[in-house]
Image (cartoon, rainbow, N blue to C red; front, top):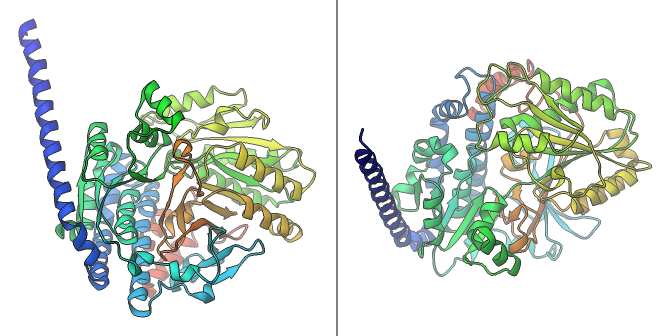
Length: 586
């Protein structure tokens, strides 16, 4: 090829790219105009019709579950028969079906009874004067599937016990005068996020939606198209693939009224303030280039507060698997992944727990680190501290794009500028740190302060405490739960439960300034349509039998996950029998 023809090829490629970009912008313009045309129709559509549409969405989720999981495995570089398929059954179709199914029941209750299924009898006032609403267990299947767990949504402290119920589901009681068009910028890591964010904006905020997929999981487009077809055919939802240019065009479009982001704080800041030095200066001065209302969920350096006690070997083994799951589920590409394990200096069983965690991680199947930038982030963290360990899962050398699992042991808790405390690794990487405390009471106080004041983000936190210690230091535990400034606090278990249960809320602790957004603003899921949410608290047993199906050590997790999807909306006796059969052999 001559130099001239090579130059002409470059010109032709550039011309084609410009033409494609122009076409894509034209399609976006058309889609937004269609949404704008239908936004007021959505406001006036009867609740009964909205419920019917949502039931059709649920049918599409369930019928397309197997095909979606198959494509997810391909996208993540996993074999079709991989034992890791359970993660995509649980984090995709099951989470979608669970949340949508719970929302349908709440809206049916609202239509029939004037409330979403929570009433005065579900509310109580805590010792600190705060109103809490019991949201788990509520449904019949909760008593079977999450037996022994309790969940409450705590409302912001200004809310009075006499007023919360009237505020509940206010979007259906005080219909806005004008419809709005929302842009949802979908996350690239978990398959249920984008769909559930769209459902939230439609059903809890009365806004029609355009969804832009993250390029990492564009494979979801045909599956979302199937599930959301009823809403798309009616003119209430549109979807687009694309990268940063399409995202920027959508964000700045005059027909987009609001934006919801699931991603990173850096993406949020780029949208609000721009990039580079000018963007940083605008952020410092809080001078936005985009002043549209933005809700967001932006990640976290998630603390695992491990209260000192006297544990049996079986309990150590259980929580080693529990914590390993929080680290290695989805290769650590979760905003709620375990990032910093906080322990007491001098706790006699600290070393035994760390060793057990290492043993579990080393026994797991190596898998591709599919999310872009994982290796760069991994290397930054693994080289940030001399206590870093690179744990090799099985088959590491023979697995393309696989990385070791990072565990940085004994980071100095006084080094508040340490990378592990200030940045989300977003790969399979966690750290341990220790605090000097005389007993469990002082440890709970100090670890709460450390999590609130030192660690970046406010999305979710875990407190692990054995029942003997809890009995002695119950008031100290209650005080810690009261004071932890996180949108979800889970006792003894992974806060991913708060994301996936639907009746619980998911989002950052409220109050972040626009130019210090941290984990974001607003909550999603929230199927009981509560207002003025502060946090969700889930209380779980110290150990659970049979083994939870989300544990990375569960031998039949995929079989259990498939049955959970089957029973997401109906407790069928035969399916339950299969569920127990596989659960007991996990």
